[in-house]
Length: 303
Image 1: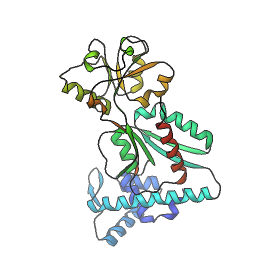
Image 2: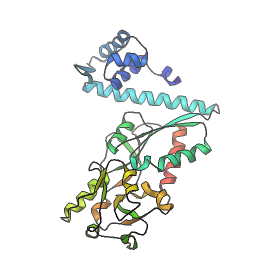
Image 3: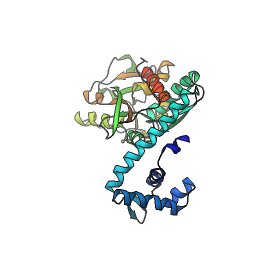
Image 4: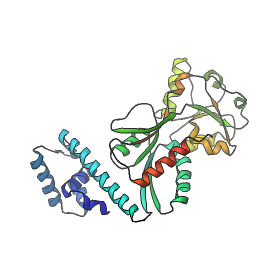
């Protein structure tokens, strides 16, 4: 990438060691001799009069001073990427890359459709999408591996700027024609006669559901638990099983008439939000800003 010419060599080598956890692996990735990388890191340590890494048997771990330098170096790298992208845009080149980190609820339907639609307007734009749990989405943004994070969150994350936030209550999901689909809202006790297919306990959906059940002293034993949302959803298509969801996750399958969503009457289930995240203090490339606006417009659409 052209942006590497705008970055200090020592900082580039330092960041690669941070990512890899060892000089040997960084050497392979950079195609640079290990001795050259070691010299650059020693040079930084002498210049800053601080130890940047703790050498351990399983690799190199950042010291407190190293963490401070890594945060600075990351911002320098991202700024160099932005400058190059914007300079290319000034020349009329419409190519570029947008990196998105998303939790699974966005990664299945919402993000692929959004990207495909965006690329109809900007066909030369390439996307890189990481899908993982909310904490890892924020980490991808914080580590500079993603330009934008789209996730469901309950707690603030350090060094993360929340560009947009909107309520994402936990809703009941069922096949069309289910006995509970005639209600405008239901209580948790109304779920008792039906089998439940629930996401894993480490998801925000499940955590809020379990909290609400605990407050009402209700115990449910799901007949199916999965870390994969599509498995849960497809399980509902026949029979009377129920699951839980956020609206944006099943937006398109609701529109196709496959499922029905019903609010659950419990305040504890309202404590979840959609968050669009960027790195605090970072200026985004112009094409990423354009996509961010496009994303926010789609999020605000009604099902």
